[in-house]
Amino acid sequence: MAAAAPMVTLRPAVQVYEAALAQARREGRGEPDHYVFLPAETDRNYALAVMGFWFKWVMREAGVEPEDQMGRLRTLYCLRHTSIMFRLLYGQGIDMLTLARNARTSVQMIERFYASALDGEMNVAMLQSRRTSKS
Image 1: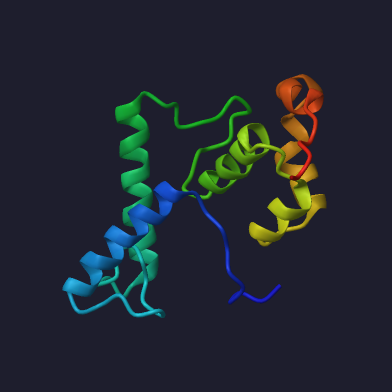
Image 2: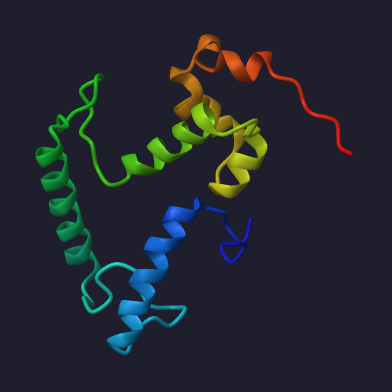
């Protein structure tokens, strides 16, 4: 799938992006090829380190352990896992193919790495639901 293909996100994320874009434009940035976070920082490794520091700080303030239940360190990349899991758990009738395409991954990757922790009882309402007829 081409990197330029559109992706869908939740409305709150769009609002955060639009606010960040407006701020960047006030600072003379905000072009399509500019970075969303820390756009003035040209050293992207440094920018990633700063965002990682902020992520750890937010976790500490929120009382979230730095490691998950399996002993793996929580990182910014974990937010991708969280977003995919939330869509699987709370998205109304989301199918894995649609989710995989939007996340730029495969159904097999979602099944292997994301959905492997799910069981059939986690979405009982979805399993028992019926599609409504279209008028």
